[in-house]
Image 1: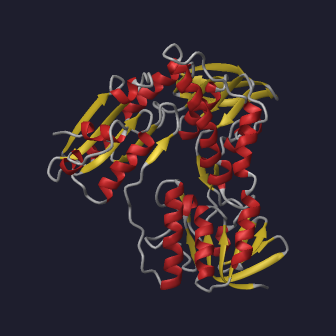
Image 2 (image 1 turned 45 degrees about the vertical axis):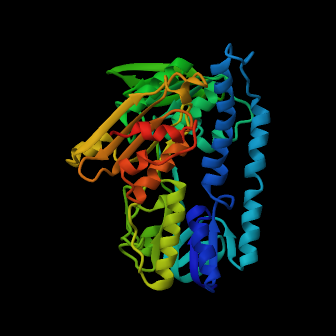
Image 3 (image 1 turned 180 degrees about the vertical axis):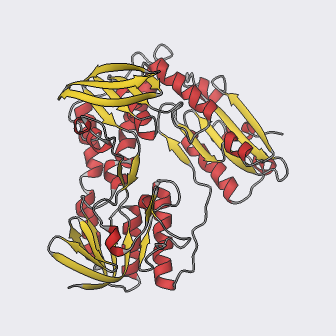
Length: 449
C-alpha cells in the first residue's frame, strides 16, 4: 500500500494549489481525479465559456453599431468557434500531468473512494496518507424528474458540434443566463424556465430587472415560477413539461440544458467511511478548512461549505488548507470582498452587500442608483441597457456594496473591490484621477457627495 504525506482528490484550482505547494515543501504527494486533469474552470467552465462570450460580444457590438458606421452585424460560425475554444482546453490535461510529473507528484486517474479515515482506493490501488484534501468541486444538482437523462449539462453545451435552432434552459442562475446570451447571439431561439420568483437571486434586484429587459429585447424568453416536471421525446425533438400559476404547460424544443444549480461532488467518495460530515453546501469544515469530524481531512474549493463557488476563492482556500496542514492550523479562513460577474451582454457585476442585505443588517447606508445608457461610455457603443447601484456606509464613508450593469463593469468592479479591501473611502475614491475616457473614469460619478 503506497504511503504518502498527502493525498489530494481533485486537480482544479484548489487541488492543484494544495498538491504543488505541498510538493515544493518537500512532502510526498498523490493526486487523483476521475475527470481529465486540470479542473472545471479551465476546461468545462469559466475559461471556455468566456471564449464563446467574446464572440457573442462582437456580434452584440456590431448589431448595436449597425447604421452608426458599421455596415452589417457579425455572425457566429459555431463549428469554427468551438474549434477555437478547443485550442484553449485540449492542451490542459497533458500540460497538467506534465507539471505534476516534473514536480514529482504521483498522479492517478479514476474514482477515489474512502476505505477508512486515512485510506483511499482508486482503481486497484489503495493509498494512505497523514492528511487528505478533498477538492472535487461540484456537479449538476439532480432534478429528480422523468426524462432527466435527456438533458445535457454545461459541459455538454460547451462541446456542442452544432448549435440547435431552439434551446430551453432549466434554471435562472449564472449558467442559464450566460449560455442564453451566447446561444441567442449565435442565432438560436432560447427560453429560460426558472422556478423562483426572480432570476439571479444573489444579485441586486433592480439591475437584474434591467438585465431581464435587455434579454427580452434580444428575443430571449424568460418564464418565472415555472416548475419543470418532465422532459419527453428523443434527440432533437423534445417536449419540456412545466407548471406555472397552477396550470400545466409545455414547450417543444431541440435541446434542453440543465442549469438549475450544482451540488458538492461527493457522492462517490464514501465519506462516511472516513467519518467526514457533509452538510447541504458540502463538506463541513472549520475556520481552518479542516473537517469538523475528521482532523486528518481538509476540504477546499467548491466542495467545502464555506464561501462562494468561484475560482479565485478556490485558489485562496487551497492556499489556506495547505498552509494549515504544513504549519498546524495557523491561518483561519476570512471573508474577503469577493467580486463576481455574470457574463451576459451587458455584463452584470457585483461585490459586497446588496441593498436588501444591508437593510436586513440594519446598516445605515447611502444608496445611489442610476441608469446610465445616456452616459458617454454607453452612448459611444450605442448600448441601451446600463446602470449602477452603490452602497456607502453613512458613518465611515466606506463602500459596502457595488453593483454594475454594462460593458466594462467586470473590470470596474475590481476597482470597487480594491477600495473595499483596503478601506478606501468614497471621498478618497472620488478624488482619485483616472484615465479618461474609460469605464473606470465613471467611478467617481457612481459615488454620493
